Image (cartoon, rainbow, N blue to C red; front, top):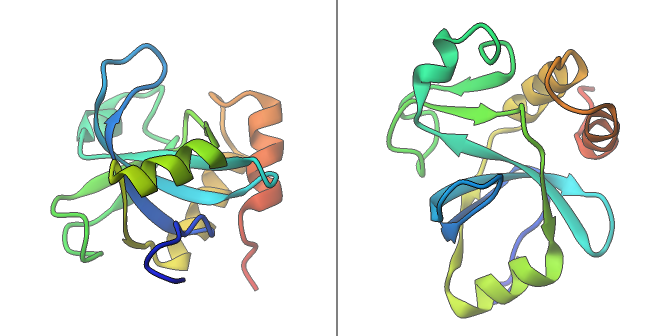
Length: 142
């Protein structure tokens, strides 16, 4: 991927400055792209270091743990929040990349995408259309 183009392939991790969704205040966030639903829409899940979700019955089976030092770009033990699918405008992501508000942090190892697929398939919190869309773009294990 040329350095002047954003990578929206499955497994790409973007760092977004001032990301806001679901009524939460804007905050710097990592977003894991799981794939593109169309030319105009990318799908992803937020990555968080809020491990409190691991202790909550409603959420503990809806996250994927990423151990400390499992990647070069996550400095803490983290979780991929598979309970809320982020639907992102490709145009907005490209504009943010060009403006310097979005940076490509790296690629998540494919084993995490396979684990996300398992979690999404069994999700009790995602809407069925989110499950269907996520399963269409997530890579299958070979």
